[in-house]
Image (cartoon, rainbow, N blue to C red; front, side, top):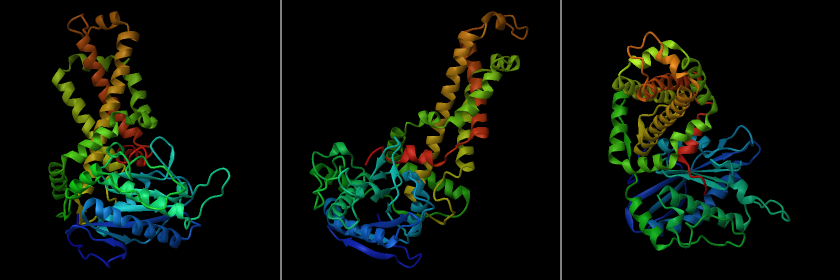
Length: 416
């Protein structure tokens, strides 16, 4: 939430504004157009400005604060292929820092897909405070009708409604909060000619959340200072991070990254039949095995974070917003949970091999064992040791075949 805009560069063009209630509070929104190679960006700029003008009254009334929408320079995409919303995060966070803005809305004309690989008109990320609107779905005609134009009244008012709907998600509102109105599940209505109002429960939520938007801060230079800033940001705002982690299903992330999982499982299938690995596993203490696993999981997450350049913004800036720090911490914690899920996956496979495939009498007859009895705890510890090696090899050799999938699956909602 901005009280005044730091003068870092020439102020972008103001395309829509509305004052309501507490005038000392102001939400600055950047409108970023990302267009296909053959598209005229001015047409998308006009659509975005019109949607903002149609939406700003309802937003100001619902939140009781001032809203300002600013036009940003357009970005030309390389092709017309479909995009995940996370693919716009780099540019959005870059403009958010430069603005600076409290929210960035990306308007594009290429198809947008959700984490379930469904085409959607728009998606929002409450934690990163980025919303993406695709005009492709809004313009799509029915079987007996051709594609609509951006000037079509139905496209105009559904676009404004979708904008308010997504900004409601950014501020914390959910579909179940709405009995009726703009926050119910978005559906394109060809007869829509106005933006629906907020219901009372949503107004209460938005009014409360609006005061909680972290302010922009300038962080000192240096890695230690930036690390301390990230820690302070999480301490001040644990709720949004915890909510994002609950919604992320991060331990299941390795199932969406076959290259990472394969690089982790493949070497362990050889190591598990190695006598040396059993010697180490049987003679290793339980505490040592647990610490080795914990440290390895964190190291693997740190390696992926920096090797894949998953922090935001990608380019180094002296000005870092607090919510960007929250996004970076969330991405790191998601990677930690993903590595923990990978560890559990490999560990489960190792236990099955140890209990079902590996001959128990063979282990009991090994001369390196001080006691001929092989207990279940010994199998669990040895499996954990081998799985830890698998997690490290997966992170080092496999990596992430698609770095945007982490942000895609953890930061954005599944549906508008």
